[in-house]
Image (tube, rainbow, N blue to C red):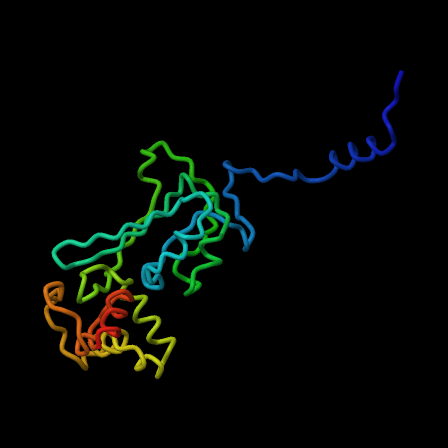
Length: 203
């Protein structure tokens, strides 16, 4: 007959006299630790729509879609909570550090439709005035201009966007320059990198 070891007896007595290790969830609400990684949320005021979170998400729980309709471009970012593994890569790589933040919410069980387990935000895009393709979100342009400060005036596209946003330049109606050849004067336009390269070469 094998008798229990003293170490096992010690652990058994210790567990009988101590409080339960687990919480009483769901009977009582559980409060996670401060650094707990839970459901991520987009903060629309702080998100600039750069798409860094979309690029680094290891399970592709974040979708990014650019739409151009009638000279109006929008970028839609969607985080799917049913796929998210709460790894925190989106928050760690957010360039504003506040655009997408992990909450302490962990109870994601629901009886509703799975398609409802998501959050979406939309951002306006800056359009190239030559080819009509989207360049980047307006909020990202403004963020870059603020970061660069006086160096903003070294980039014609960024300078023109900054002046228009500040109300110091007239915001003309968007007319694509597809039918017009790029020349020296085209450099003082909001252009994508490809069109700006052609304008610089031809000038």
